[in-house]
Length: 223
Image (cartoon, rainbow, N blue to C red):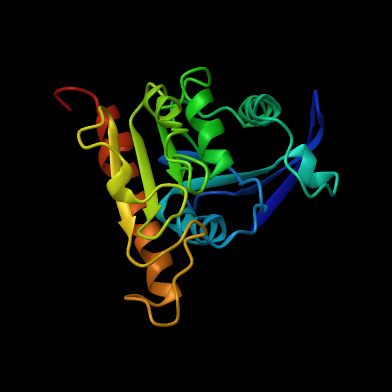
C-alpha cells in the first residue's frame, strides 16, 4: 500500500509517494520523474509495484513544478533541491543503503546528488546523454560524476542516447539495455518484446544490480 506525504521545499511543495518493503527492507530506492511526465510513468510504476515484495522500499518524488500543475519543468538546480529535501524526509534507515535514482531529467538529478546524499548507488533510467539530434552536447560528465556505483537502464532506440553511444568501460557504471525501447522505455507493436516483457527487463535488471552491487557490497568482511 502506498503512503503519501507533502514536502516543503525552497521551490514549493513536493509530494513523496512511498511503497514500503515487505518485511525488513534491504535497500531504499528514492526516484524522481522526468521533465515530460510524473511519477506515474510506466517504469517508475513497475518498480514501485515489483520491488517492495523483494525487500526494497520504493519512494517516488513528484517535483514541485508538477505538483503545481505546470507543464514545463523548472531549472535543473531546483530539481536537485527537491530531491535533497526528499532524502532528508526519509525515515531513519538504520544502515539500510539508499539508492538515489530517477528517469531522464530525474536521472541527471540523481547523478548530481548521489554523493551529496551519501547514497550507496545511483539508478539512471533513460539517462539523457544528449538532446535529440545533438550528440555534441554530451551530459556524460554528470553520469561520471555520480561517485557511486551506477546502473543505467537504456532503451535500444533512445533518441537521447542509444546504448552504443555510451563509452565502454565507464568506471563504476553498468549498462542494461531494453531491446526495442525508446526514451520512454516504450516498445513498438512489432518490437522484439511486448511492453510487459520490456518492463520485466527493467525490474529484473534493477533488482539484480541492487542485490549484487548495493546490498552485496555492504556485507561485513569475513561474515
